[in-house]
Length: 317
Image (cartoon, rainbow, N blue to C red; front, top):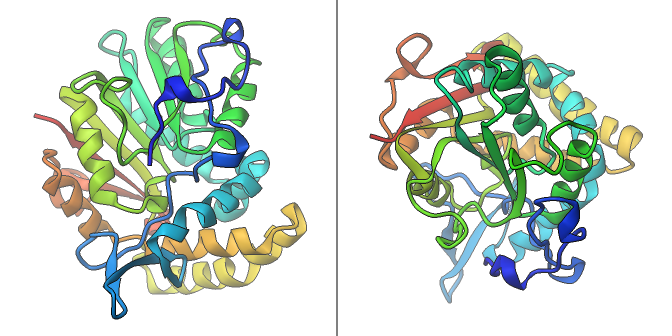
């Protein structure tokens, strides 16, 4: 559920930044509500005598109405160590993947872009977009709206940008909203040239709803780009990755952050995410034009490191 941004408490004084007001701690939402994966990608199941809707929280099945608070707890817990968490989950390679992800978009190559980075609270993708546009194309007009449903994540991104030249400029804004239902008043249809979401969509309750919103806010000709942990296609690598994920990562969570359970959920959420062909079809079903339904050149997605992560793209026609 989304609350009007005008009703929310400012995180910092309005004169200090373009940070949109953030909801108070008592009613903060989760980081793009964790999502279930079914063969249809519907995001929910009916169970029980009364037809109660259920969803996945990692490998657990929980009532849909409880998911938000469960995932909010995870991302409140890991917000201050989010980059460290990604370092652990990818052995540090997520930084290279993000560089590759942004480089493929070539921000600024054809003039300034208006971008939206969803589930991007810590601001690392937004910073890469702005740096790439400035350093490669002398573009200081491209802008990024960073959108996240979790206030703690947005606070981390805001702190990051206070150390940069983009702070307190029209090039960056932080906004709290639900990726599944961004308000038209704040996010008008046909507004953005580029929509990015990195390591966030697997945590959403309804992937189709997220894709529908992405299609709505993009301009005709706009690009949807998603970077996400995916399915490994090499059996040997897959076995090694599973052993690392389920044996080592929760232990690292305990050592690095004193939080085994959050790391356990994040590992499980990767395994519940649809495989590459299924997710690519969901993007196409949302209305996007994609490459052919295969990996690689001319395909709908590109695997990184054997499918540990993948980049999916689509264009709104």
